[in-house]
Structure formats: C-alpha cells, structure tokens
Image (cartoon, rainbow, N blue to C red; front, top):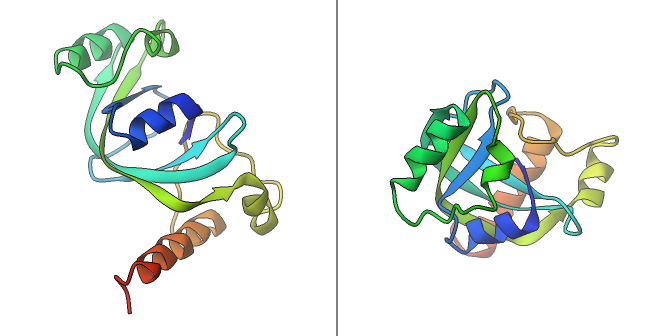
Length: 149
C-alpha cells in the first residue's frame, strides 16, 4: 500500500488507527498483512500492519462510522482523500511494525527492474519477487533478534 510519509508515521507511532482508501475493487480481509510503501522523499517500504476491521460503503458512511469509535487518528486532513468516492474503505490498523532497515525503491528496482509502486494498493502473491524480498527481510529481522535459530 502506498502512503504519504505523514500518515505512515502516524500509523507506526500508533496515532492513526484506521487508514482510509478509495475502493478499487480489491478485497482486504481482516487478518491480512499490509506492507507500507512510503512515498514522497522517503521512497521505501518501511513496515507493515495487520488488518483489523474493514468498513466499506460510501465515503459519508465510512467517515461517519469510524468517527463513532472516538479518537482513531483520522481527522479533517483525511476527508478530502475519500470525499466524493462512490465506494470508500476504512482499514483498521493493528500491530504496526516498522522494519529495522527500510527497503528503498532503488533496492527493489535492482531485484525487480521496472518496478513501480502502486498508486493505492495491490495484492502481493507468494513467490513473486517483491514477496520474496520482503520475506527475506522479515526472516532476517527475526534471526537478528534471536527469534529464529
């Protein structure tokens, strides 16, 4: 999932508890892992989170529903992104993890020539080069921390 730096850091610090998106027809299931590609000057995959609740509907419905949950880190800066969308989605952020070392766009392009980050989000499939690059990163992180022997 591509995301602006401001919103990524809000997710990683636990401030932002829901990520809003215009729906593009891909199903996002609770329990899925979302890998965050941070755009702007960062241009790197910085981490991931687990999907909790998924709320779908008109932009107005999604906005009204998540606002009922209290302080979820969504404010007026988020509304213009989904305003006017026929279908919007709010993805609950659970267990955000920032990687010890970012995976920079240049590094990804060395492994996957021609790679372009998604405009919004896409599904990663087991066995594809980006999935394997991320898997190596995650396993290395666990080994470095002594979790895997």
